[in-house]
Amino acid sequence: MKRRDLMRLAPVALAAGAVPVAAVAAEETPVMRVFSEWKRVNEFAHSQTDDEAFEKALIERWQVEQRLMQTPSQNERDVLIKIIAWTNFGDGDLESGNPISQPIWAEARALIGGAA
Image 1: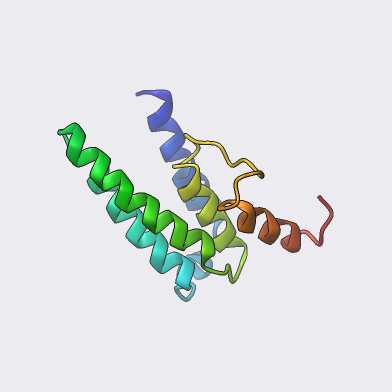
Image 2: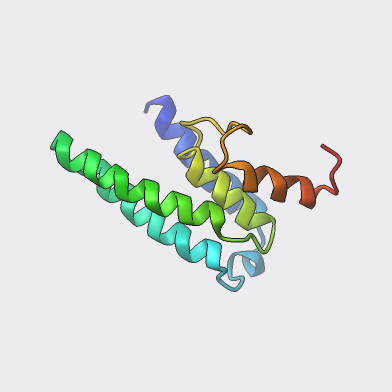
């Protein structure tokens, strides 16, 4: 198993052991709905064997990611969902200087009371 595969499994393993069943069954937020779309588009992109089809699918994923970043988070889980999508489960950076990722940092600061 590759490091990338382990990284993708880590959030699932942590969530399965640390999150109460009641929290998992929480009401779906707008961020969660867009994230479901992101996962579908991401899986489709990575299923493409043709470079041109892959690139086209990544453009669609990018559009969904931009919508996701602009969707206001309603809770801590939403902020984590955005981080997961934006970094593609840790494969990418979450730089604070990128204007599209700035809402994540603003939401994270608000969650901790501006202590950062």
